[in-house]
Length: 303
Image: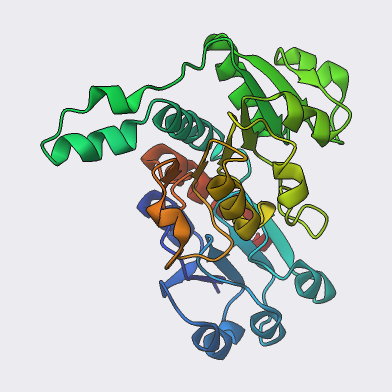
């Protein structure tokens, strides 16, 4: 008898077809916690993206062998509950690297060159060139917080822009950083004080929650900007808003938020902020790779 897979977030059609080669697949996109809890006992595997929160309640009601996250982070899965029940958890950290890296620079350039507000102004039939004086990336210092796959790719591309790169990551070595022409600093404070642009690429854990807080923001240059395309919880939103209002930093570009969807926020009213709705992984290429990698890992576990 074929194993049964439940998919509750939309993944690429190619990945779904691969899963159907060895399993009976049910698609229930957008199912609520209660709906998943009521049906999960029939399934051997669950595949999600970031939308579904795989809670302890869902896991307790299941006889799952594996949970697959078609993406990078696992913060929407109760890993402790999964571990207690002996459920394997797999993801595809290698799949989204290029998509996230490229959006990082898209946000960075949009912010530094006032592209978003310039576009808005022109659509309003204005021609206010003098209002949109920006800054080049060339010769700026980029501080990368977190030097995993994405951090290293960001560093490699920053080199092509002629930027100096600093990085802080307690889990990498000086030699690791040097391979991507980056300088590893021993303390995050040193990075914040010396960077023109700070880009966050760390995982969200209890230790890294609000890694960028009021105290850290005050260390940044008044002319510096913050980019967060990793996880919303890495940045204290209230502290960021306060810093932007006070002119303690010059701007921010955010793809992720502490509460998603974003809803009402002072960030929406700020011209020195560029916002996107968690689209870092939203490239056609990345979604094919993420879905198929997770399906293949699940196939290996289910046999």
